[in-house]
Image (tube, rainbow, N blue to C red; front, side):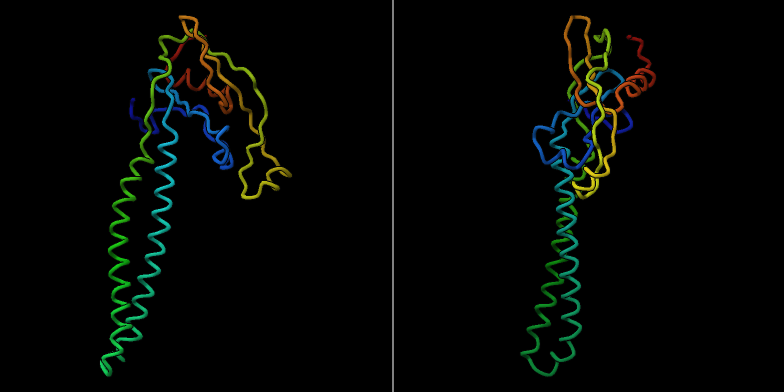
Length: 201
């Protein structure tokens, strides 16, 4: 496995819509072109890391609201708590809310950073090196609706079409490796060849 930065690779078949993540049949491997070949990237781990970061962020926001509630409780009950000992209870509850929330936020920030590294790391396994590639042929080119609005109905009524195709990578030793669902497949092939200075047909 090799680790990458985004600027080192060209993603060949990104998810086109958020709805593809809901169906396992569409959750195909993510392929990327690098300077030495085509890699199959670890999409599931990255998506899991991203989901964890989003979840952590939501919990931090909730804890921040709880801390604000605690501060509000303390500010209201503190003046009265000097008169009667029983009035210390709301003040202590408010202090507890603030302290617990701050502690939770600090812990979650550390956890979020750890998951953030996973979400930002791209790790891939070499599928085929450029030295082994004889030719790449674009096949099964079609127009797909890639509208990504929140409403499936709107996506159907007002579609946004994109050209999607499959790369068939023929190797020197006769293997045929399929890279499915490459977006804008002809232009992307030309771009990859120019970027990495490749001269196969």
